Length: 405
Image: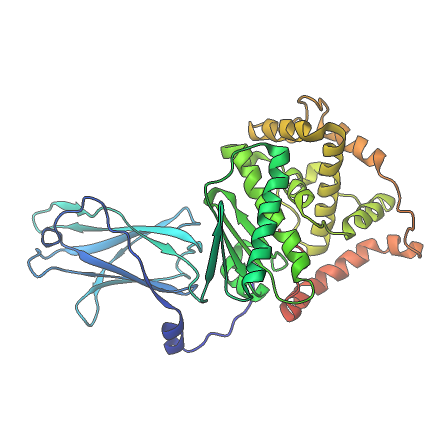
């Protein structure tokens, strides 16, 4: 996890405090009939959320509690509201008490036991917990709404074009419905991105899609590699969203190798190192079995690179041999609940995963110009260990994205 130097509390409140737009509960009773009114939310993104409310002078005395849901967590919290110096009821939630996912809708409501013993509960209030640290600019071209804070309009248009290109390529295979709206937030540094992503991602991950929420966040630092990263990252994350559109509630059943391999295949300029990594892994017998990539990918950056390379090569092979219909059948089979080993037992493939993997390996050919020194292949495990050791410091010091999710 990245360590950040915290500015003074005064600076935080001046720069980051946000008066959230609270959506009032529908059908609420007249304010003078409720023991709690005028809920107001402020927050310092990534640190704390404060909820204040009024107690009408005519209201009966009562102990007031607040129940707040925690998006991104199965938990909810119930805490007593206490008066502050101004006489307002107040609850302050430190994010150390419970994680709240960025770019999510937070719900809360008030509860009280009145003097006569009657239990009172307010309707639900809602506010949107966005990253307000930056002056976001926005452009929209359905179904994408793109937000960025560094770079000119040409940069934003390039990013929007890449998102649309990725959607078109993915849907040429998937033939599914277009999402209603996808919010894309582009960060200008890996550090800014990681602060938002928090503990949900690895340090080397530079992009993240939450397809169910219609959300993509990624880092696109300025520099010589920016355009290349636009052409890689945006189509990749959009492909995850489109895959969700095809799979629906069964999206979580799709194996990691298919999910990530398909997304990498949709990139405008796939990683040129992937072919080399697969070739070296094949020659050194260091390939990761596909069965081990059915779930999550390795967290070690170097090993994860090999996992992405294999998955991309494997899915490209399936597409070449069985066409778009083969990939659609495979996706539908897995999303319907087929197990990872038997998911490919569907038309037009009709082979189990192990047999299919063997056919893919048999089709691989050594690179025309293999590594000059045989010791390179023999030293692959040591190279992986060295890369894993150096990956974290390199990312922290240089802000270089080794690979997107």
